[in-house]
Amino acid sequence: MRLLLWHVHGSWTTAFVRSGHTCLLPTVEDRGPWGRGRCGRDWPDTAVEVPHDRLRGADVDAVVLQRPEELDLIERWLGRRPGTDVPAVYVEHNTPREHAATTRHPLAGRDDIPIVHVTHFNELMWDNGIAPTVVIEHGVVDPGHRYTGELPRAAALINEPVRRNRIVGADLLGAFGEVVPVDLYGIGTEGFTAAGVTPVGDLPQERLHPHMARRRVYLHTARWTSLGLSLIEAMHLGMPVVAVDSTEAATAVGEDAGVVSTDLTRLVPAVRTLCAQPDLAARLGKTAREHALARFGLDTFLHRWDVLLDRLLS
Image: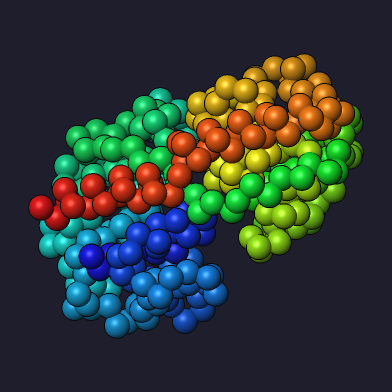
């Protein structure tokens, strides 16, 4: 198939473009959010950059939408109406804002564009209206079992922790930093300050994975975000997890892969215990990897997408 989609979420797109389908990625002159293209990513040749002004009349079998504004852009750039003139699906990456149970989805009034939720929690919480919905959970390109855990430190990956603060649980990091050193990765971490927390910055994936895998435990603090791919990647690496039990985290981590709770008096000691007991950490990390491979494997992700796309075009 020939699929038109934007490069919005790097890790999700990294998995999706390995489908074998030709993925057309719009570009704009400044390579901003409405046309990043590949961004230099090591993706298959089937991920093809297309200047937005050359899209009109392009051979496209289906459109993969990810933001409400793309509905208008498709009509202007492609010259076809998504859901009417060209089959379309809408991938919802996020939890609803502002109100958890009452926020109406932008496509809730349409029945011609299925909404693909990345977690069951998101499907449950959004008011989807008459829109058909399906859940296709994340898939991850397996980085391999790279865990050494040689450093008794915690790793956390949070993009823009200063701006997003309580939403991503950045305000909780200091409590963990009081008992073990915490290395903070991600975009916009340079301005973050908390006792015991060292901002590392935004590392390319080929450096990030081995860097994280040397840390003893992965720390996931998000209160209200969709399931972070960094958490799934950490489990693939073989890292044990200590996570705030919010949104999809409880089922994503699985039993005996770490500690998941809403109680800081459990979570903080758990990080300290895992940093002090490397054998226990390695054992939980092995279970975490097995769980991640079984539930978030790339083949399963791509198969589910193929089933949906086949049904969409039938």
